[in-house]
Amino acid sequence: MYGGNVRTRMRDHLDVANSVRSDPRRLRAARRAAFPVVRARRPARGRYHPASAADVRAALESFGESAYYGVNLIALVPARSTNDRLVLGSLIGPGHIELYDQPRPPWRLGETLSDPDRARVAAAGAIVETDGVIDWPNDTLRRFMIAYVLTHELGHHVLQHERRVRGKRAARTRDHEARADAIAAELRGRLAWS
Image 1 (cartoon, rainbow, N blue to C red):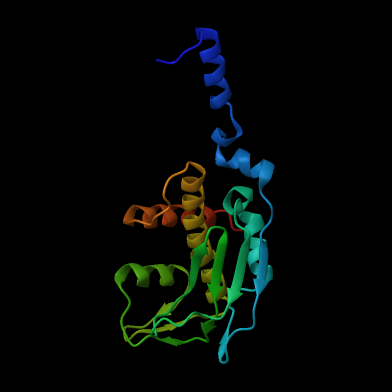
Image 2: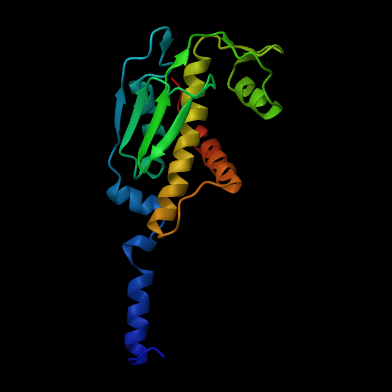
């Protein structure tokens, strides 16, 4: 049984309930979020970064502190080798997101996209052909990298950051992917495209 009188127990409970760690993410972010460093490395030969470091910074400003709270670095880097798999971005570790350079459009994937992937890139403005060819007219690939790839990785970051703050394991699950997509959709709504 817990010792002490009722008044002491009540005061202890209130101190915990009103602690800084129990504040909602948006309040903690407003107090402590530091704008992440955004760096761009030279893309590999024949590839490019569809979204620039300036595009990423502008998007982060649109998303607000609660989206980037805990992110230290967003790096635009050459894609990691993945056995010919198309990679777009990744949450590398706590507070570190990478967005990868891409081949110039049109992309010739050599395989047909799944229906959800096809719908996602079409919603971003891509022209998807049945034989695995995807074209990105105008600045649609730039927008896709910000509105879908960056937001999805920020969704993973938010979920894992919150789990670590609560002292829980930060493993990815199917539900985690769905929640990251939901956070990405919310962040897309905050974008102020110029």
